[in-house]
Amino acid sequence: MPSQRGGVPRIAVGVGSSAATHAAVRMAAREAALRGYELRLVYGLHRVPEELPDGASFPAAETLLDHATAAARAVAPQLTISTVIHEGTQTAALLRESRFAELLVLDADGLDTSAGWSLDIPAMRLASRADCTVLLARDEGRDEWPVLVGVDPSTGGERALEFAFDAAALRDSDLVVVRVGPDDKADPDGVVAAQLAETVEPWQEKYPDVRVRREVRYGEPAPVLIDLSRDAGLLVVGACGQRPRSAPLAPVAQAVLRHASCATAIVRRIPPGDHAVR
Image 1: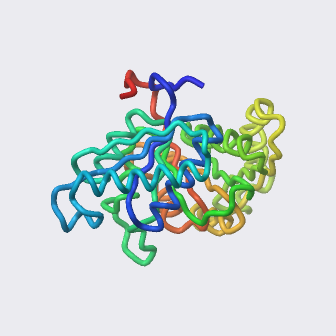
Image 2: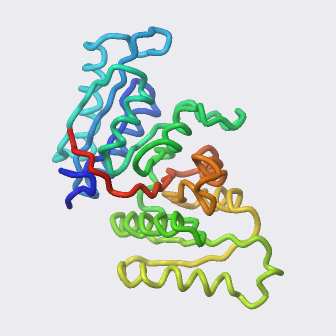
């Protein structure tokens, strides 16, 4: 499958020494194997020691990349794997790699759910600024659980639905498509359910083997999706919601990135560029 960004499509993931980073590498390997993509292992070599707990040296970075390569091959032995060391922070390195990737896999380090909202947290910054869709690795062992997607009338919602159908097809898993309305009393004729069915129909025709369940819920979208994520293997939402100019990352995307119980994909609608794979 050719990349919209030129060359062989790839999935990029950051490498470090933490358990969360190891989980992200394994998830990235599984995603790359499912799609037939190259796996790109990325390390940001920062020269300020207190900002580099893994050691500010190329040999230390190369050792971590070797360990990550071995972990990825244990998941999928036939993967095509490349490695890169960028000078600078890990966040900067991953943002750079997102220009050439179809998917950027993040670890959950630093996502303290008790902390205040901040787009300065690395995962938040990456999800809000990356040039591709990002996937937060969380709670391994749910690969065969349903894919859950929250949709709205926005273009971003349509892109999220496309990603979710593709993910469910690759995993051979069920797909739960959820539209959250503000109040059931404001929809006595079931208009929201009818709109949801109309939205899903063309994708169901494109992916006839995907088992789909449509659900209309009422309330605030973020709490509803977070609650439903307890029974899902992957939660998919659009990055910008219905107000793409209001914030770099919509409030719903921020909330599920921080609080969902399963792996979370934040789907960005980035037009195909003229990037060349390096």
